[in-house]
Length: 324
Image (cartoon, rainbow, N blue to C red; front, top):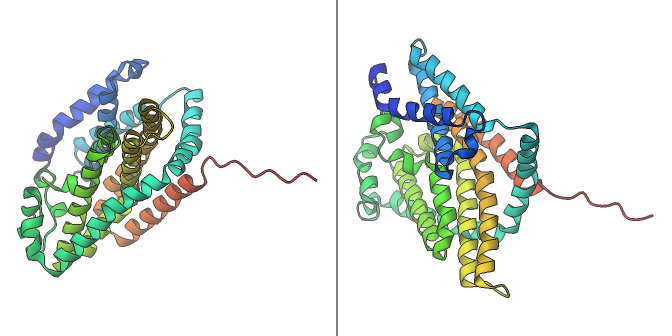
């Protein structure tokens, strides 16, 4: 893709991010709507990927300098705050967020199984008999079958032609995760649908790629940022399932009170997941496109260790020494 086409295809996204950054200046961020804040996070992540491409392919062009400045401004908008606010955010991420994750652990495990089991079964079926993909894949996925048969991956195509890649590798994870969270309000049915369809999609495409000898190349691309991204999907699914459970089985509480409590916990998980996805997006923008197993492996290990250390150890009270 030449630089002019690159600019033409992505200019509107850059201009929208610049507009939201300008709106957030000063105390303006308090006046922004929730969907604008979510959009700001999504655009920050997507334009970070654009910057990585520009630095790799058009490093001598002014577009690289422009995107670098835009990302710097967006980063300041996303992460700025008064010292007290920063301390509150740190306390939230290191304490309240991991404690809530552990509280909802059974639902998170259920979400993991609902996604992973269909993924493994579908992946094995497609790997052993790729013709299965013709009747189990969605219409969008079927468009990728000839490409994979020819020994190509959609992630090798110019960005403007990667019509299905974003939904498979979950580059749109903030929206997917928030939908899974909110799906709990449907008694968990929407959450179940999202987990099942993503599991079938990931497993089927992995199986197809492995059958045609492209599996490890795809794994190499996904693994660096995928550890965090899939973890967040499991957290989102667990939160949505807990809301659904509160509706169907409120226990001694009223159904309204049980749902309010479950919703509060889901909001905590949603708030803690967004910074994790921003980190994953940075890895996806700068590390994954290198297709370097060493870089991807190191990113996967470091991100996994840090994320799960936070979830397992964060917010635990130190044990008191026994009285003499």
